[in-house]
Image 1 (cartoon, each protein chain N blue to C red):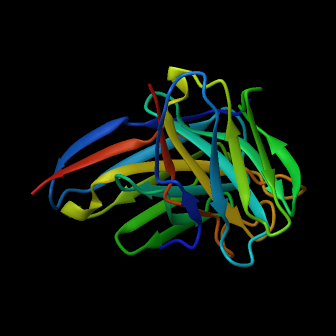
Image 2: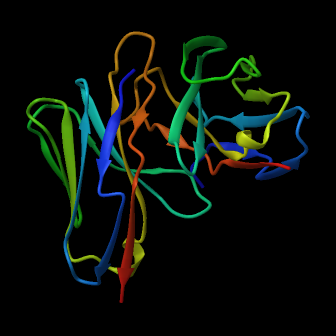
Length: 116
Length: 113
């Protein structure tokens, strides 16, 4: 157990629908990162939050949004889903932005999203 | 944006053989990381490198931070079946407000007993 909790583990939904993925960071970690992993694209950085504020954006579609709540958990919202959105979505956390190593840039086990 | 080229894409080796994989970047990083991902799990950090030229070991794993800061390699010696998985390199420029990792596309390692 990495200490980063992601729910649900699996999600199957239809095209056009909206889903919410949830991440609870490791205790004491303030920064949360979302990554998308698909077969042909590897791990793609989507967005980063630190202590409730957005800090960096990567290749995140406009149909996707995220937020980090006062209790530091984060949610990734995916709307108007398309078949191509099927992927593994990972959350990672760290103490501070960029403080990846000694304090643990730790990944959760991911949410597998299947859009049918 | 920054891109990492990781090679080889896949490797099929015999148990006991040594493995070498590498990563090159179009721009410099001040941190290089190597992760391993098992099926159904998230990536797990294996080795972190902080300085150009640094050579670091973790058991049978050895990684080096290239002098140009644009490349890194990972070696696994005397491979065993549990080494099977996907290995990712990742680069990061820490400092300031951002610390997101840029990942290579991975090297899939298969080990024949």
